[in-house]
Length: 178
Image (cartoon, rainbow, N blue to C red):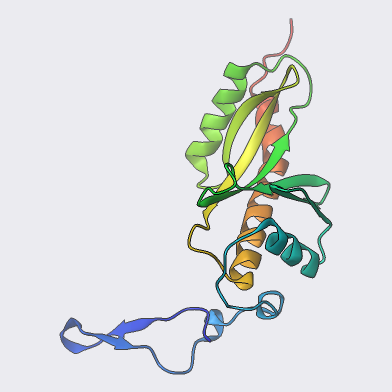
């Protein structure tokens, strides 16, 4: 089963099926090809199974799966549990002191203006402010294991990118003490 179904536009603007032989760019890579394409409800168990199959550290609870990539911890969850949206998030603790909600919101606004994903926002966590980098994916109609793999790959890579870049942006916002 091809990953994508495509069409081309023929004479008179009519849609015609694409050639039977898909282009190489449409083929799943070796990491994705091992996963099945049967669509089913997305569950924490299925997410954890894909994390395990992809060789990532993993753990789970009733409503959440966790993994780690290059020392960045990620949470994968639906909130509430029957939400049609799944969220992959990383929490980034600002280095140093003196970060306020307003200064973190300014950095988040700048990030969100320049990046489609992940969405970044500050939250208060045990009397300190942290940044959350969150990517949301629609899973309400179910996904195949291959789609879960692609979703996790996307969410983890862009979350890791944010975890690497945000500390530099947070440092730019601080005013030197006099």
